[in-house]
Length: 382
Ligand SMILES: Cc1cc2nc3c(=O)[nH]c(=O)nc-3n(C[C@H](O)[C@H](O)[C@H](O)COP(=O)(O)OP(=O)(O)OC[C@H]3O[C@@H](n4cnc5c(N)ncnc54)[C@H](O)[C@@H]3O)c2cc1C
Image (cartoon, rainbow, N blue to C red):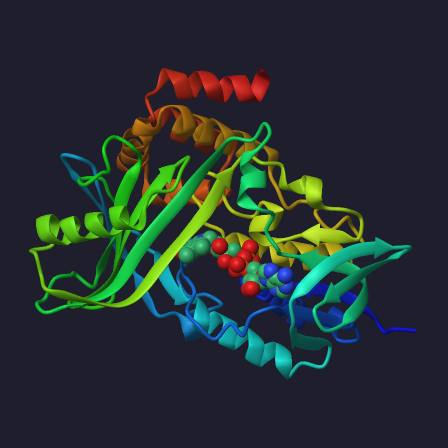
């Protein structure tokens, strides 16, 4: 009879690696058998994660760069932000994958294989995972494979795509302030839609400069590149520059019910489990926190997904996504008000889903929008 694992984790990206590392750091899993199946070598920097946290953190040894200061530009005005004790941190995915692989490959309960999963099915009380090379069995499977994006866009869900393309570039003259990153710059937009530039400066000559959209549809590659070029010309002193790396991606910001893909023995994790914050597209820290919660659920013999999602934030995200979908031009105003009318700490706590009801009211009120306030009360009591 084939060996049966306690857990199989499909995918060693952000969520799979976070979950495996959370298991690794808990003695409860010392006598368990966990198999991680990842289809690719993960030796390339396929994305750059940024996130905020208070002071020092778990990943500081592999953090590439961090900032205390930021700015947000509206059409007319710059908002200067001091994060005080918070830090905005940049982590190259290739460093995270290498760190996770190194830890997991030397730990006894874990087996790490590079294979592609082609089928997952429940057979009696177990789950069978079939790869292009082998057949495995487990009592429980965590699966980070994403359903087709078109499937997410179908049905009743409202879906905005956060889509972007950026350059890690090097300029011939001093161009950037390495102490201050640009969270959102709305001075240059693509027509009237929610689109902005994001700048993460490494030093005076090097930065990641990205042009980002929050819109229902993607655009041609040239549109991102032309905007980056124009931004450098108009707002950064027109330096000569060399592109050293390209980063691009699409993150679904959706009200789609990802929970429909869970079953008693299969739990979807990461973007596939709805772990991306629908109104911001951030998920790195959510992957960390939700993985810790799953580990706790396993230890306490609770349902795997218990406590992973807070209903009120799901409702707030829905209001936000609906507005962006139906009145996409409104994005700049929303974000500008959020950053200019609130203490940054409060706003980031809100995006982190750590606020009280009174704090939520403060945030909603800061939008000074009858539409938002009405929608807010409607989702609460409607
Ligand atoms: C370019 C980009 C930049 C981002 N930047 C940020 C950011 O700055 N901050 C932030 O918080 N969030 C960011 N995100 C959003 C989110 O954090 C990431 O998408 C994150 O990687 C999601 O984690 P995940 O585990 O769901 O997916 P992934 O990290 O993509 O992991 C899924 C893994 O499953 C593997 N896999 C897929 N199919 C199979 C199969 N059949 N068999 C075996 N393995 C399989 C894949 O190879 C992959 O390694 C970004 C997303 C993108 C695309």
